[in-house]
Image (cartoon, rainbow, N blue to C red; front, side):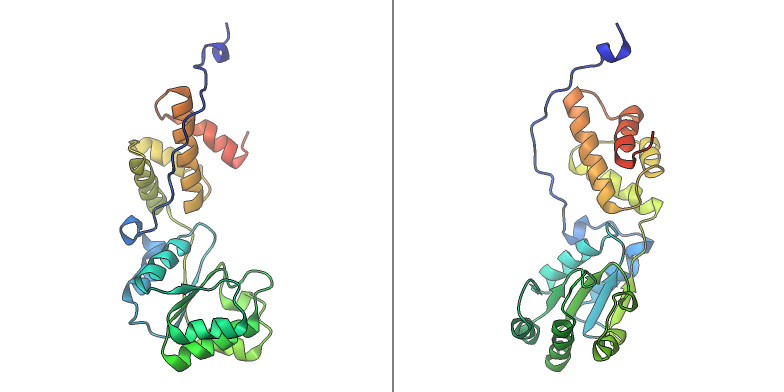
Length: 229
């Protein structure tokens, strides 16, 4: 009988909802997020009416945007027309997410910023990169974006990823030790989204096999996540 034959059979675990917590108390703050967090906490005392949070996927900007959305009772821009978007900006705070996505409406953004400034409102914009990399072709829009407050969020560091892992496991009533956390952090993709995925997969795999969290289990999950052989 081989070692694989003696491994406990896997059972399909019941699916429980583990939605990412988006409250202020759920935010783990480390150096890469400190400046952006401080600015979100300062609202409405902002240095300018338009704030841009720029950072790579999984850096925490979406969590910060959700916190601000609730605290400011802001509207989230969807597929509104230019006139509808301007009315939103005239009537209260507005959140625009992923402003650097392909095909975003530069004219709409220009008129929204003008409305925000004219009516004393607030506009929070998230993006993966700073405005100079968005491919803006309207000179007047670029001048407005240059006047905005830009906060760039770097990739999460080891300290932040470690804290996030401990919290995500604790949310599931699971405990890991520092050695296992360090093993995972040293081999995972540098993003908060990756941490969420790894914790979810480890939880499900351990439950399916009826075993405890371990380095070997983590190695298996990490191999699948990173594609390492």
